[in-house]
Image (cartoon, rainbow, N blue to C red; front, side, top):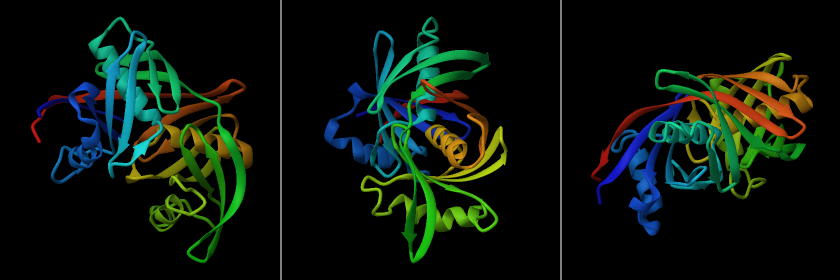
Length: 265
């Protein structure tokens, strides 16, 4: 069945958006795998099925491997950009996810690129622990920001490099300590107000950016790495801004719609 489809991205973390009422429930996993394939589909890190609400939109997120995810900070902003495109008066939407409702506020518009601040809620389950990864003991910070996160803080003996990401990422993302899998970030605290991260996304692999990963990395760096509670988070795709406040995490960054079309697969 043909479907309306939109592609949007935030800092290179890209998603496909399809109206949920144009899909069949028991075919959604296969659809996600098909459309997200970068060789035989359109290509994306994830598929978002969405529907309108008075305040904004509902969304269901599938990773590229077909696994369902609770939330994505970048996908939420991309959907907010799509809502603002389709309903220009609704610039401060609320997006309802499996992890809860996320209010957003439009703070800047530059062409098709819209910058939003998203209130991502409180982190939970924050703690340090040691994990055995293929015989190596790795010190990590575990927490949830609506989805599971595993943070490795870099240091003299733990470089934040692509090689280290490809070595540790798949081991930690599927570690038995995380029954539902986990997103993984390697984090270097460059200054108290600036951290650099590399991301291994659950069900995807390396990604250019991650909104929830930026939030989790900022919290871990503030709690255990000497960073402040307000930081720029630099990833390969660009820089997002995170504030960890008493009432939760504020994530600021841009998103843009880059393609609209029809899927006939």
